[in-house]
Length: 459
Ligand SMILES: Cc1cc2nc3c(=O)[nH]c(=O)nc-3n(C[C@H](O)[C@H](O)[C@H](O)COP(=O)(O)OP(=O)(O)OC[C@H]3O[C@@H](n4cnc5c(N)ncnc54)[C@H](O)[C@@H]3O)c2cc1C
Image (cartoon, rainbow, N blue to C red):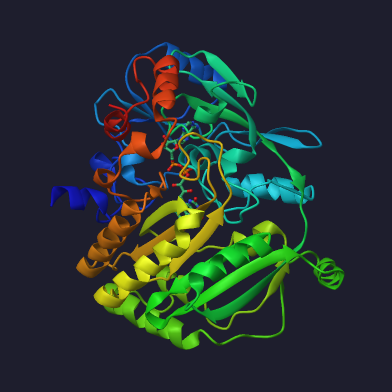
């Protein structure tokens, strides 16, 4: 019972005055004591802060991860917010260096203004910090690319003793630093590879889910970028497949001042499915039609193809607190997993608030990435909070049951989302687990950057 509450915590109201203990973004976890956040203004200040103390330190970015990734418990513990160290540091023809706490939105805007992009497609929002996103394996979609960390070519870290270390691609520990769960050091700079930013046309279709396992592989092989949302109850899928735009589409996009072009033909084939999902969402949560959770679902109605750059097409999410479970399974197992979810769904008929999100990526080099070493299909499941910050019992039991199905298939959970640790045998799932631990022991010998969660993980 206690474990279940920890896995999917309730939301709290904003705290003020004497009880102003810091919360995470979703306001479902307390991260530390009141006054525990420190915000150094320069790297030199950060270095002397670390060199001058021995207490535990946990880094926070935009605090969008579950509380266990961020919290720290003791009175002398520090929550380190390096948000004042942000922005573009330098740019070359093929790379860009940003301070670690730069938001992805700023990274994307800066690159787009130069006609550049990362060789890694964006997730659904860009409010995360670069260092926070990298530290949890944040990713988008498309088999020809992988996580944001895979676009990195150099990291600059301030270590637990205040010293500075740099890691480039030739360094034997680079792949550990690429996804460090905030346990190795404070990322103060990241140099990222950049590429020309093509204009994409994203075709949007509504199809039956009868052959989804095969279709998903085909869509991903035949297109640059693919994202799909599966409504198992209605046996329907909305799929977005993006390729470089035709000359005519590019001309239209340019003529419109490079604003996202919405093509004329409106497809209403999913409207009944959307209405059914909205009914379930509202029955469970009481959220209003114009509240953010409802709007995330309404967006599947009346859709059109679009033309724009990679960020305009894919990074368009509405950020709203939710419990989001996302598990990566090897791509060649995806069709079998889809079948298993279908069978399970037919028996249990859970009331879902949102479709199953399907995103595939190529292999990641990062040792602790869920897509390390293999093409991966990520299955995402969302349950929204009620108005009063609670979760419906049905929503919780849906998440628990579906995560068990995926964990049994060798799934690896997204580190920055919700999962039940007891379902996973980490060293068996991650072939470089022991090496990562050795790197951690070398870079942070006294485990200053550990908290309860990472301490237990690497115990
Ligand atoms: C609404 C929403 C949408 C999302 N969409 C996607 C998506 O499309 N794709 C996807 O893959 N994920 C997605 N996520 C997950 C999200 O990208 C991760 O939770 C990410 O870690 C959040 O970044 P942050 O800046 O908030 O980091 P935080 O949550 O603040 O921190 C995450 C981790 O990074 C560490 N850290 C932070 N800063 C530093 C630093 N400077 N140096 C070293 N370590 C540091 C922290 O200690 C912690 O371990 C989404 C989450 C939400 C809430």
